[in-house]
Image 1: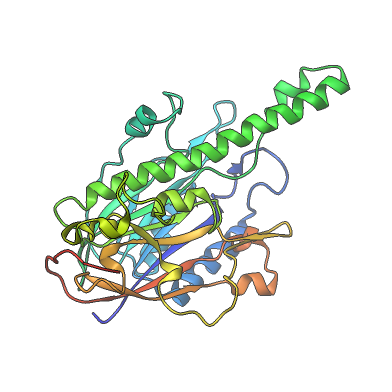
Image 2 (image 1 turned 135 degrees about the vertical axis):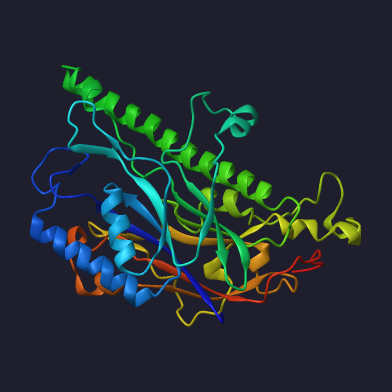
Length: 356
C-alpha cells in the first residue's frame, strides 16, 4: 500500500429522530427528512475523504452509525462505551460516545486507564475521569503493521452553570453576582478537565511505546481547544525545553541519551508537511464562531524526520466545503473532518533516532 489515510470526524449530534440532544426543545431532534439528509451527507463525505480509518465523535445512535459505516465500506467497527441518557427523560441524551470505523482489521480494543496516576500527582478531585471515555484500538495497517489508533473527544468548552442553583436565589443583585462566580468555577473545571484528559492520554501513549519506540500511534480527536492551548501542549509535550534537564544544560546531555527527548513526544500532524495557506484553516464553525478544535496527533514513529519510523506524515487536509456553502449543521456538521495521509516505510523494529 502506497499511502494510508486516517480522519477525525465529529458528526454533530448523530442521534436518531426522536432522540433530543441535551434538552427537550423544538429543533433539538431530527425530522425523518433531516435525518435522511444528514446520513446522505455523511456517506458522501466519507466517500470524498476516502479515509481508511475514521474516528467519529458525537455518536449517540451507535447501531445506526455502524450500519452506515458498513455501507460505506468499513468492515470493522468499534465503540468506546454507550452514550448516556437523562434519568428523567430517556429520549434526551446527556453525553455522546466515540467510535472507530476501519477498512483494516481491528485486532484489539485495548483498555483505557483511568485518571489514577494523574490524580495522584496533581490537585484533581479523586472522582475525576474522562468527560467521554476515549477508544483505543490496535489495527493491522498494511505497511505500518500494528498501529494504535485513539478516538477522543475532550471536555466541551463553555462554563455551564446549573439553572437550579441560580433560580433558587430570589434577589436579583445576589442572583447576578452569584452567576458570575459560579461561571468562574465552571470555567476552571472545564479547563482543568481537558488538561487532565490530555495528560492521561499522553501517559497511555507512553505505555504504547514501551518496548517499541517507533510504534505508530495516532490520536484522532476533538480536543475542544486551540493550537496554542495548554491542552495541546500537554498532549504533545511541544513546549520548548529552555532550562535543561534538571540542572544539566541540554548541550551537556550525553549524546547516547539525547534521542530520548523525541521518542516520547507527540506531534500535531498539521505541522509536519508543508502547507500553502498562510493561516491554519478552522475545523469548527457555528453561531458565528470559528476555531481549530480537531486534530490528528502522531507519535515519533510517524515523524517524517525519523529515519527509523514505520511511516511518515505526508499530508494534512480538511473537508470543509459545507462551511463555504453555509449548509446547516443539523444536516451536515459544525465540524470539518481532519484527514492525515501517511506513507508507510514498511514494518520492522527501528533503532533510536539521534536527532530531529
